[in-house]
Amino acid sequence: MNTLLNTLLLLAAAVAIPGVINRTRARLAGRRGIRFLQHLYDVRLQLRKGAVYSPTVSALFRATPSVYAGAALIAALFVPVGDLQPLLSFEGDIVAFAYLLALGRVALILAAMDTGSSFEGMGASREALYGALVEPALMLTAGTLALASGQCSFARIFAAGAAIDTQQIVILLLATYILVKIVFTESGRVPVDDPRTHLELTMIHEVMCLDYCGVDMALVKIGGWLKTAALSLLAADAATTAWGCPWWLAAPGAVLLTGLSVGIVESTQARNKLSRNTTFILTIAALAALVFFTCYLLRLNIGLQ
Image (cartoon, rainbow, N blue to C red; front, side, top):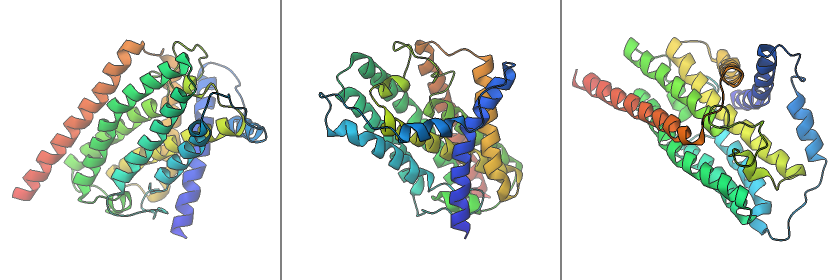
């Protein structure tokens, strides 16, 4: 029962986060905005359409949407909602989580290069660079959570209970901040990327999907929602563990944390220049390394006592 509830809350968060982002952006701009579930209606329309393929693409291009969505779904199933039991869990699943996200990224990059388009190849090059820069931050943050709890599984990390002292609370809150920053990069949001732009020279994620349509485009969008929800729930789990909040606050906390933060940033900030994105992501990785090293020193001090 706990596993089923965890999965349902995860899927609900994946559906609600884009809606909160759109509503927040509309309210801050003084507009009525689109329907809360408009993105679901758009995907339903795409699922009813067939796919059109260029004669130059191979089977890799056709299989990528399924691989991307499947990798994001399996990775999300490792993430617990509070102290609920996820559908998939084993010792060391924090590493499998990162590799599954990397698998989806690599598949999308290879598919973009398979088209032979210079624009999509340029977007794939940028995605590969940013992915290589943000993955150390994700691994270091996962290592920080594992080091702070003494566990290597997401289910056990957040089932260990609230933080023991103020130092660990600070570590978990910093990990939450880093995970929220990673969401901006992984989901292709401002200030790293802008999903609303249609200028090929400035797009990153969207330009890699220019040749997709119909059901394939729907799978790519669903995979993005699941990936965003998984990272958002990790951030919410860390925050609720730090404050000792009940488990049922994790899912709405993830929706509000990501939805409001992304909506506010996209309404108040402009997208970075491409040359500044590397600095932005490297700053996240440097902060993740600093938090991990601090947690390691605190762990040594606790062990010596």
